[in-house]
Length: 271
Image (cartoon, rainbow, N blue to C red):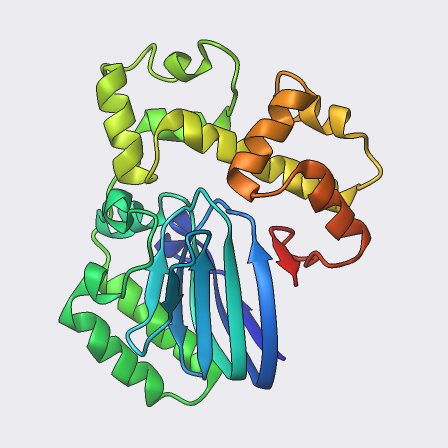
C-alpha cells in the first residue's frame, strides 16, 4: 500500500495529530474498531469504503467525504476494490479548536464535510480530485484548513480532564474546583467540545490506555492492567471496557496474541 503520513508543523498541530493518504490498487478489508480518542475526517477517492455501527447503520463515504466525532461504541470498517483515501486524525477537541464546531452536532453519526464548511467543502473536493500527487493533495488540504480556521480556545477544565483522567470519586469535580463554572455548565461544555459528558469521556480515555498496554504487553495479568489504568478492580474494568469495546479485555488480548491487531493502531482488529 502507498502510504503517506504528514504531521503539521504550524498552528494546525494544536488540533490535528496527523494527515494521511493511503492508496492500493485493490483491497478486501474488514476491520473491527474499538472507539478511539480522535475525531476523524475521510475523503474517499476509491471504490467502496464504509463504517457500520452496532445498530447495523452503515455510512458509505461519498464523494463529499465524511467526518466522525469521538465514538463511544465499536464500528466495523469495510473497504473493497481500488482504495484511495485522504484523512485527518483530529484531536478529541480538534473541530472545536479549529472551527468552533460543536462535537454535539455529530451525535455519534458520521456527517458529510458540508456540515462543517458548506459549499466550500465541495470546492475542496473538486480541487483534490484534480490534484494527482498524494503529497500535493495533503498540501491542498492543509492550505484549505488554514484558510478556513477560526480558532477557539479549549476551556481549561476540558484540558485538565484530559491531562489527569481519573474515575475516583470527586476527581471530576476537582477539575472545576478552582474555575468559575458550575457542574451543569461543565457537562454542557464537555458535550460541545468533546461530544460526550466528562465521566464517559474519562472512561473512554482509560479504556484506550488499557488497549495500548495490552497490545504492547499481552502477558501482563488483566488485574494489573485494571489497576494500572485507574479502574477499581477487574470486574469494574471488564464492565467498562465491554461497554465501549463491545468485547471483554480477555477477548481483545486473545486477538492481540493471534496477531489480528494492527501494530501501529491497536484499536483496530482485522476480521
